[in-house]
Amino acid sequence: MRSPALLPVLLLMGFFAVMPRHCEAQLINDNRMAVWPSLGIQKGFGEHWKIMFEHSTRMKFQPFMLDESYLQAGVEYSFRYNISVEFNYRFSECYSTERYFVPEHRLSLEPDFSTNLKRWGFALRPAVQATFGRDYIRKNINPEWCLRPRVTVDYNLRKTSLKPFVSLELFIGQQPEAQFGLYKYRLSLGVSYKLTKKLRIEGYLREQGGFDSNTNSYSILGVDLSWRFK
Image 1: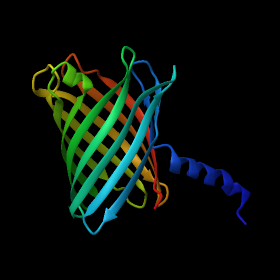
Image 2: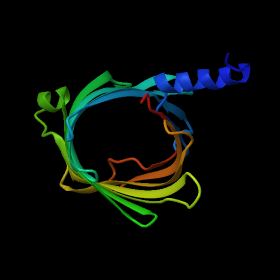
Image 3: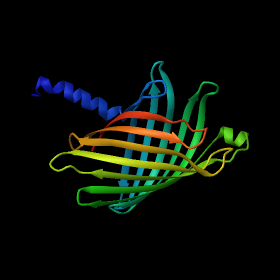
């Protein structure tokens, strides 16, 4: 017979298994809270191949609105334990106050390289992506495409599951009706903690800035809670 004290914990873990991926609070613009639950499924084939499916919907509050929703399908090939490449297709809809929901399609190729040096971990993801939608075709606008190199460095603290990290992601490419160049960056500083083998929590502060007048700059305080079924 299970102890009654375990019931709230089991219910909470069950909720996290089905719903939340992470929750973000925007600090600067209008101080709005956002919740971004997602559910992902993946299946491995042989020693190298893996297919992945993911669905997510971002909700904002004060006032409540459905901000963005997407479906993503992808395939990954692992050359070895620390080198892999993903190809993903994403269909998303972003809410616009003028045009309601605006559909978009995104294709991305994401190589991933990682290595460890004693207690330090280093990861590089030089992704490339192209985004296009109905408005691009109707207005005869070229698709938005960009290179998204991201570097992550973490440190595994001795005798603890705490792992502080820092990451920098750059957006370099061609936006619609704009010139090629570096137009956005994301700088994140945070710490992750492995609660159990299947449950992990991560907190971070992210600064996103633009190098042109078309890209907004803002800060995000985020909490990411991930639960693995298996």
